Image (tube, rainbow, N blue to C red; front, side, top):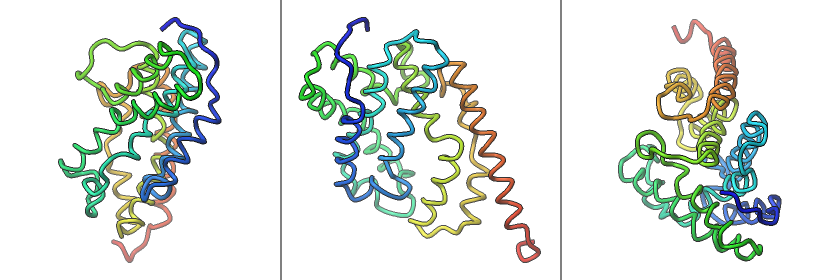
Length: 229
């Protein structure tokens, strides 16, 4: 990935992606607000790269961070959002896993309209298509892909990871206490083998997960009551 292309207009790319999500039924609000999540992946990628001191092709990473999930607008949501256990059934996960591949032609069209070269576009589309390929599914990863994969996970750590279960609970009629218990019992994905690629990413994620733990402790104090004993 050595080609130098014109700098992407990140604000315009985000505006186009946000507009696509805002036209959907599920992805512009609530627990599945991809306008927020896309923003967080972009900022997380910037944070990781700032600690790597310019050792990667940041333009491709940031453009891919904005465009990587736009394929969710093309998923068959009737297969995903069918019940209160949305995203947890095998049927739903199978459809959900299509979003990376669905994002590629959309991203390609957007970048082509923006006047980027074919080579530059292919580099970004490579990142988008493989951003979900964690663990043993993929042996060789470029540094750019490692950053995008890590940013995609870190974006949902910390405060964001704390907020989303409550929003999920509100949408699917789950109590606040149940959501809080879910957060407290949830496996720490940061330290799970094969999830994060880079040590700088692990450092960032652990800091965010520490904050999440502190928030859980504070919330547990709020519901400490003899009525629940």
